Amino acid sequence: MNNPESQTMPPALTLYYSPRACSLASHIALEESGLTYRAVSVDIRSGENTQPAYRKISPSGIVPALDAGGAIITESQAILTYVADLAPEIDLIPRPGTRTRARAHEWMNWLSSTLHVRYRSVFRPQAYAGENESAVGAVREHARLKLSDAVSEIEVRLAQQPYALGSTFSVVDAYLFVFYLWSHDERVAAALPQRPHYQAHAARLLERPAVRSVLARERTVRAYDLPPEFPTIILG
Ligand SMILES: N[C@@H](CCC(=O)N[C@@H](CS)C(=O)NCC(=O)O)C(=O)O
Image (cartoon, rainbow, N blue to C red; front, side, top):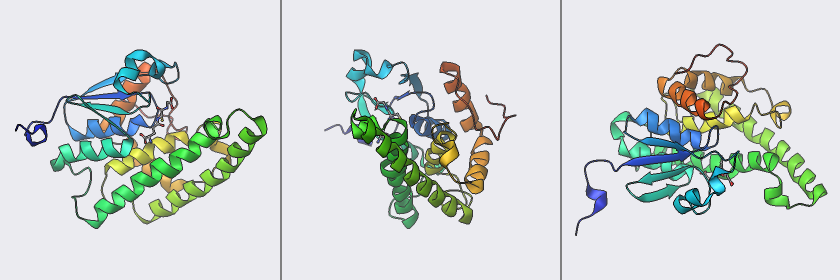
């Protein structure tokens, strides 16, 4: 039988993303990979993700979603790993069976299940507290504290090495970069600790042509702020 996974050519790839959402990590990974892909914006701010057209692609309505030759893959960790594996020569993730590969999954899983959830609990506490006002306030306040702890943990880890996995860039760094942008959101910025190593990490990412061109593309769909400490950055 013809096994589509055994094809030597990568499948046609379409990424569905929303500007500045967690899908930015997958967007950067695709650009870094050198693979041919299409990027389609589904702006969650304007509710495009709730429309039937997108629900047909991603029934839960979340981004990112990657159409890989007709198979829809969701969850950032899955997409980042898949894209990195499609372009092994670019070294966007360590080889299977290595401890650094396990470390990459440790990071990505933590970013998705812990850090992202803490941001969401501040930005959209109703997702956890329902509509009860005092519960909403309590979830938001507690999440702010927990978010501070998580950002401190990132700071400690990045003090030891320039990139998440050591001395070279990987898809984990693209994922970390998203949450660095979010750390400047006015709903959390004042509550977060100083983060010079995380800032230096973001500066390293902003030197990468792939990161710049993805930011330029996303910001033509909907402009969003870049970290204020990089006022002169030129994208594109
Ligand atoms: N665990 C998922 C989370 C995806 C997610 O929460 N995406 C957000 C954007 S950052 C979204 O699509 N929100 C729209 C909604 O929840 O309706 C992942 O890591 O990819």
